[in-house]
Length: 158
Image (cartoon, rainbow, N blue to C red; front, side):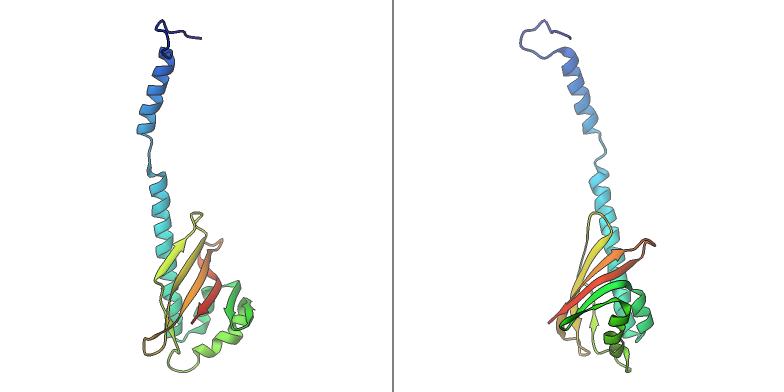
């Protein structure tokens, strides 16, 4: 053990070690948080783009494309009973795609992604054919093993 001749002062080796550690920490790359923020912002942009493309399937009257955005295990909350999986969702949603004009549209105005980067929430207005807001949608997206974002939960409200 090192003992400094000056009474009450820390040993020189400890002082030097602390100064060295402080100098190293001051040069430590801070971008860990910035990188997470950049990754989160990038994921949010991906989800926003997916949501916009998802909504476009309604405008394009393309139900088969619509289903590609929906996880096979998704749950949609429409009415009193949850719709579980593609078959139940198809039974209720396919009629919205019949006819020449979409009965409604939607667009995201909020997208949040978990720090883990595998779950996201998108939310925004639901509009009637005249562009009047008639409700809001809330969709939870999951990044699947293939890297593609798909809706796992969806719920609209007036």
